[in-house]
View 1: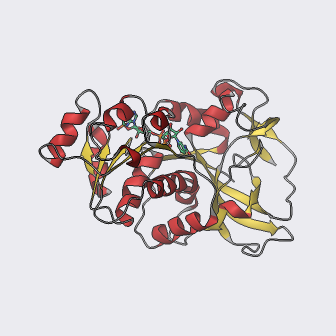
View 2 (view 1 turned 90 degrees about the horizontal axis):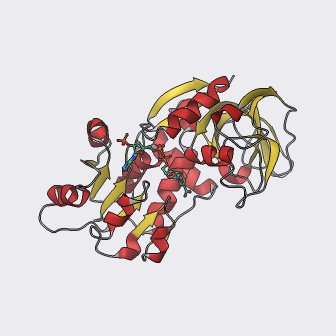
Length: 310
Ligand SMILES: NC(=O)c1ccc[n+]([C@@H]2O[C@H](COP(=O)([O-])OP(=O)(O)OC[C@H]3O[C@@H](n4cnc5c(N)ncnc54)[C@H](OP(=O)(O)O)[C@@H]3O)[C@@H](O)[C@H]2O)c1
């Protein structure tokens, strides 16, 4: 099959379109013909070798943890899927070697769900990893009815899903930080846009009125956004970051997304019902994976970048 591979760590140029053997599935796996592979900032970290002390890597490796496609074959122990099913999934595995930037992937059942009919493969390919991150992080800080929630980097892959998920969990108000060009986009998702930068604390106060604070913060930006969060939230224990480990020393939580089939089904149900929209800024062919990485590295993607396969 054709796949994007890398045989060394480095910049985007190490990504090559290659011919590699078809994957072999184990008993708990599903062979998926990939139609779309979501591109995430973590793919860039893998590519550069920044996760080599966290997960074992094996060269040549095929990157990509986010997938949508059609089931071709199922392993002996798989009960929930059959050939021909349209699926999507978050395929972070215990070893980095056989990822989603490929025509076929051996996908673990635990990170797979049926794709809602109303969602395109490209949209579904961008939903699993970012949506799971948003849902799990917001649950960790108990977001629910009546909450006022602030999401940092709300126009990005995780953020734009998080503002919608927060509303679906019952949040009364959701504020989201973005540059002004994304403010109308955020308003369209049901969030109250706030400009980030030096005046962030004042900008939030202006939206909330007076010295009011938010109940919970999801940080997808880190650095100054996280530092400013302590002045903006009532209870530091309700700050969660998916980017910045400093959050823990300051009394908040760090969340790292897990592949959980129930969470994928939760996202699929909402997306299928039209309650959760996946914004895809750009679809690129598989062969242009390196360009997709350069786009992500620019730091200003709205929603998702997805690779189309096949
Ligand atoms: N822990 C986990 O499990 C986990 C899972 C997924 C992602 N992550 C991490 O979470 C972060 C976000 O991921 P993502 O996929 O959402 O990234 P992304 O889609 O690449 O984020 C791009 C967005 O960031 C916004 N942005 C850039 N600088 C900002 C700032 N200083 N303040 C507020 N917004 C800013 C941009 O908005 P403007 O264009 O309007 O500036 C853009 O829309 C990444 O660092 C990623 O590695 C962690």
